[in-house]
Image (cartoon, rainbow, N blue to C red):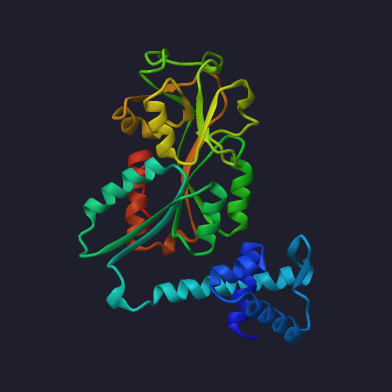
Length: 305
């Protein structure tokens, strides 16, 4: 049994296809298939079932992959931890985020504090599920997330099932984001029914679309414009009568763009802002600094022991 074979199997499972895994690994499909076949023959177990619709793990294959995936993740983490120091920046931070603007504000503060001669900061704007996967697979050290009322229970279960820690920073009711181009701009509060005549700007539909459809009936809004980033949504709202359902935590940044955060009259639960990691006690100095700034700005200021 070779590590290469384990890595190939993990890639096939991650990509759901032998062809896609071969492309990602930059190896030929026949060589990858041959290595997987040799692995199955060596251990005397069928790991994959191949059919016209694709591939899937057998029952024993699932058990094997659970162990193999852990080996691959730990190997990647070990390689990253002991890369040659001459090419490694003094400060390295990789994080995945859904509230993109919130993260940008903290990164700007962090950069002003960094005194090292070099740094490398990577920010991935992903869906909630992708954030959990990236942190779990050691691709990102931190994940910055917010949970909608109907997502909280299910996603906290997923986070725990992946042996991750969730740290809540703040919670608040959703608000409405609109600009001066909307006639409701000067209102102190707004109801959902009052918003029905106006376009709704929102994320492309997936499992984390602004607010869960079981909390808000999106069907009542007959005018919708979909985007794949927070930046695009806010820019659109700032220049049109459109609105978006949002959170209060970016109020100061939105005001600079001419967008208000107005309380929502309807009671539809709370949004939860927080961060996920593998083990808080194992965070790098850069990650710890980020979290301290994050919690100081958006929640209660507490230091990590």
